[in-house]
Length: 216
Ligand code: PRP
Ligand code: URA
Ligand code: MG
Image 1 (cartoon, rainbow, N blue to C red):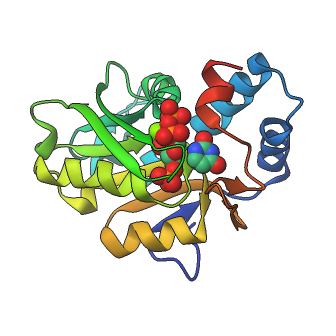
Image 2: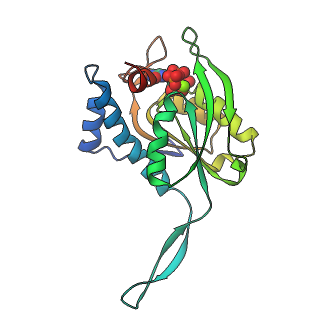
Image 3: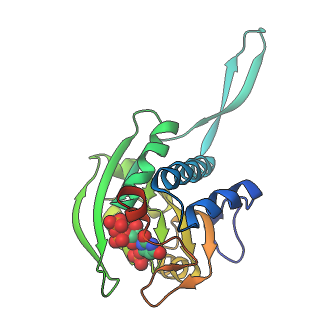
């Protein structure tokens, strides 16, 4: 569903199942194996929701009963782009749904003191400008990293309306800032948190996603 009053923001249905998954990954006492397992479940839901918004065209197939069935098939091709490091956690969920999908990488790190993003590296599929792009990063806090990554994609010729930014937790401040820069990108998110703390971490949030998924 598209959330009011945000245009181009698609929030996963806020079911008890989803709430249960977030309760586990937000819990500071959750172990790393559980954090990975339950984050992966949310990531899968985000990928499936992103796929729901791709354009389709009618398609008729012959069934084994001798009757035809008219459904749809996807138009166009997609690729993933992860914002390294935390965004790489979302690659497998995309691969599980889209076999042998191409995946590019953009390495952006937030400065720990200033929370400002810095771009270190990009490696993207050659034909990315012809594709729909699933931009992957679990956290949308100030929006700085996502804006910088999207600038890279647009410089490479990707049309903003073909970008779907998938994230697990976002803030209103992050959405507003991101959409002020890139209004036509669709944001697919699992939950909207109440805000940011002094260190520019999402609250209640879950801490540093990359550290919890890969390190601690
Ligand atoms: C985190 C997160 C986003 C960014 C979000 O990455 O994965 O990329 O911060 O914050 P922002 O919206 O304020 O820019 P971080 O720089 O901590 O690196 P990591 O992926 O190595 O953890
Ligand atoms: N990056 C994270 O991992 N968590 C936050 O809350 C903000 C940025
Ligand atoms: Mg990052």
